Image (cartoon, rainbow, N blue to C red; front, side, top):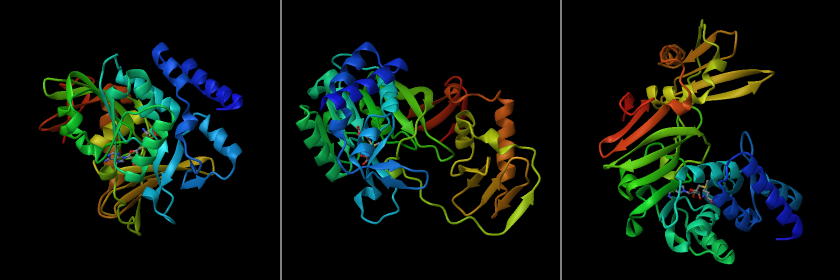
Length: 363
Ligand SMILES: C[S@@+](CC[C@H](N)C(=O)[O-])C[C@H]1O[C@@H](n2cnc3c(N)ncnc32)[C@H](O)[C@@H]1O
C-alpha cells in the first residue's frame, strides 16, 4: 500500500470505530487487513437498476476506501448478462456489524459461507489464526482467486469450493458459523454443524422487501435468536427468488385508506414476509412521491401512490391482503424488526415475536 492508501484505509477503519462497530480486538484486525488487497482491478458500482462498470483508477480507489459494497462479479461471470451483482466485497459497516454479532472468542473455529473476495476470511484468520477458519465458495473461479489473494496477503485459511448450503461437514463442528450470502431459510444441516453453545449469524433474504440479519444461539439441537437489524446481501445461489410472470395487464381501481409509505419499514417487512410468503414489495421514488408495488409468483400485483386509489391486477386482491396484514401488524403494536426472531429445529423454521414461545409463522 502507498502512504495515501494507508491513510485512506486508516480513515475507513476509524470511521467504523467511531460508529461503535469495532471492539478493540476487531479494530486491531481491521487495521492489519487492507481491504484493497481483496478487491480485483475490474469492479462495478451497485446502481439502482443494474451494476455500472468502474472505469477509472480514481473511482476504484474512492469506492474501495468508502463504506460501500464493491461488486466484483456480475451475472455469475457471464458476459453480456443483465448486470446483476453475484459477488461483492461487502459494505464494510455491514461486515463489521456481522462480525461483532458472531462474538468470536480466541480458539474458536469458524465456518464462513460465501468466500467471495476472501476479505472476511482474512479478517477471521487475522483474529483467530488460519487453522481456525474454513470458508466455502460455490464459484470455482472466485474460490481460486480468493485463495490467491489470501496467500498474497499472508493468510491460508481453508477455502473449499462447494455448496455452502450443506456447510462443510468434513471440518465440522464449528463454534461459529457466518454466512455472507443471504438465505431464505436456515438449512438444518448448518445448525447440526455448530457446537452446542455456538452461534450462527446470517442475513436472511426476505421475499417481501429487504434483508435482515439473524443471530442464532445453538443449543439442544436448535438454533434460536433475534433479528439484529437490516442487511442487504446477495442471495445464496439456490435461494434466489425466481422472477415471477409479468403482472397481468388489466387493473382494478380500489379505494384505500392505507398510505403506502407506511409499508416501508423493516418491522412490517418481517411481519408481512412471514404472513404473505412469495409476495414481494418494491418501491420507486417518483417525482417527489413514492410508488409501491406488490407482486406474487402467479402474475397478481398491486400498486399505490400516497393519496391515490390503489390498483389491483390478476386473481388476487393483493392490496386488500396487505391492508389486512397491516391492520394485524398495527394490532400487535407495530413491532420493530428487532422484536422478531427465528427458531430453527430439525422440523423446520419458526418466526416469532418478542420471545420464542410466541410463534407467528411456522414453515
Ligand atoms: C457478498 S459475497 C461474499 C463476500 C465475501 N464474504 C468477501 O469477503 O468478499 C457472496 C458470495 O457468496 C457466494 N455464494 C452464493 N451461493 C453460495 C453457496 N451456495 N455456497 C457458497 N457460496 C455461495 C457467491 O458466489 C459470492 O461469492
